[in-house]
Image (cartoon, rainbow, N blue to C red; front, side, top):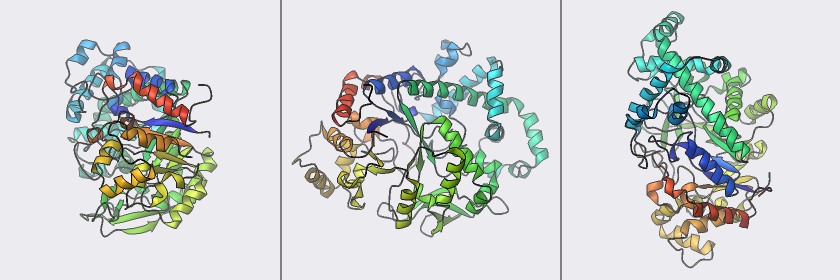
Length: 496
């Protein structure tokens, strides 16, 4: 792979008419701007349907798409909605932060209007048949969940919770319309995303998708396939995922995701994982796997603990999993999220896999992180970022980080001072000038935005995943500067 660059921007952060970024004309405009600025990649966050907390890393399904991303204007063009109907709903302000409560209360009502006018066709039936391996369980799970006022499947009546065949058959019959409504949502999502993805590829833009290593406890995946996870005879987790205490958190991070039964996955030839990666490579061109170190060792916290302090490290599948994936799918295009404290065995796994790891400039100047994030230590086989969705914006970080880190950054960059108006630009230049084959910059940094534009503050609930671009921020001037820096550091596609 030759030197290249791209932009990190979640789909939900795109400008749009109905309260949240989606597969609208604004998404196509963004792709055009990326092409004109010489970018080769658009990195997004997971596309799955979200629940409480709105995190794309806690989804109701590892295969399903978020119905919030379905463009309503496309449904208008298809005759399934009218502009007047769309205007009757309160989706939140056009340029304000995402109001997920308003989206939740309005989006499904609008989609239900469209569903009621939809006539099933061969294209729809083909989609349903091709995706039945996940779609049927997901649609039934969501229909039952709605019928139970949204409570987690662990709180359902025992026959449904434990998937007794007679109870499932009865639910399919009684909730048939609701089940089909969820099939319809996934059909429209898939159709619109496939069209946008194809368009991006035609413009020379590859999509970097993002998948969490774990699935959510309250998900169709765990309900439909409990045998994949470390559950007891009552389908309660025996342990859950997280991170141990470190310099960032005295009690560690308690994520709460169920852990995999790696022995069972090995017995099945890692069939579920192969299916998951194959499906992800259909959705995206490159797959970034979050928390890659969990394949080497995973941190198991006793279920029910209030903190992550009493967890212990357990062995993961290692290269055995990736050999199985490569044997079935060929060599997948994967980016390994290898941030944080890395043991020699994790580094060995990364080396053996050949996957590029990640470098984050904000970590380079933090005394709590090792100095292998400094650009002069990079090898070509890595992806460099100024920051990720879990970091503050570069401008926000620089104002919040300690004086020692700020002074070190200025010394490293040979600058006695960093100017407020070009601060992010200086860090972008450092990343773009590195030997890393791929450089990905959050859109907020090209706009030199402060902390208000941060996407997520880990281990907090509320106020995350809500930042949106305003249309006037996507100016030609910003993308001209993007193109200038891209050309300067030799990351332009050959045809430009």
